Length: 499
Image (spheres, rainbow, N blue to C red):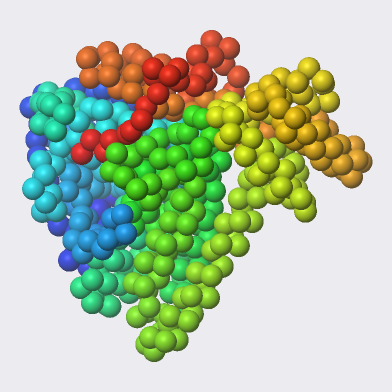
């Protein structure tokens, strides 16, 4: 493992960050350590075990030559511009070079106050730290681009929160970078075109190196185009597994295309397209079925920042940016339909498939069918078997409409089988579906239960849940309870940021 000088010091304008050290804690203790990720990063054993690891990931003992920084950024929060945000409780302590030669930020979240804390205490509680640890690692196992979690450490201190005192904790977050849409907004608010250009150069070099060959100003438009494509792809993946981010503010959108900041996120149980859980999202702006639209809206805010780079003539710059932004809806729709086809086991998208999908989703919504389990049932039930077809009908309400849908779906599968002339078998179709439709997701009620146990000093339930979530597509007979939707008394109405 090679630790590398904090690259932000060399790549960003000095106004884009503040050098600030973690605030030491009293009695750090390891809570969870991601030894698999640690091995990928080539970290030595004493970075992952024992007292020295606890001291390191609490921020009490930094890597050699570390120069920690907190990043400055701005953002649109629930549609409203906020010119000054920044890392108010997180510091990037340096980089690690993994076994494949890629570089990764090492960030301590909950490490104390920074110049961007805005009256906050800079700390994090054990609940939010474990939520991000579990959900981010589950998302990685699901195959969705995400920041990762390396370690969770308790601090031996209590922090004050509105619901009462909570045990303090620090999360070590690993990301290919922590640059955000809001990083551009920060410099745009200040009218600093030179800093915008430097940030855009950094984003291209770190995340889209193939664009380095583009001449200016074409490369700025090419950067926007790449981010449009990347954002559409990421949100389709969220929808595939029923994920609801909860706070899709522009400062929570990573230029790397990784899912960033897991605050009040949640996974859908019963399919309800307008569902949202975030306690701070009172109007449902970031509901499940609004995420694609908000992705486009956020990209438009990013494009506004890039206009001075795209063309000195503002009218030409706007026209060029709009042409790129206008491609978002079709890119998203193409990916979305292809994703739904995969969930249904179809090898391609044909005319009329959208009708089959919308009929199924409509049935699920009216029946309150579990999103994950319904698609998993489709993946495991051979629908040429009448008993399996009847089981699926019962899952969808056992109505005439449900029976008609199953018949239409069977006909579509037979049509594909005939056209493929034996090149695609039922077993191959099932294999495709089983790697698209997970059996296990981080269900809200299970998350809350393990967080409550951890707050009382019992980390074993969180470890057990993690072990199941690391194999989301596998059949795990000894873990069937983790696939169960919540009972009425277990349902979670709201999730909280916990900052």
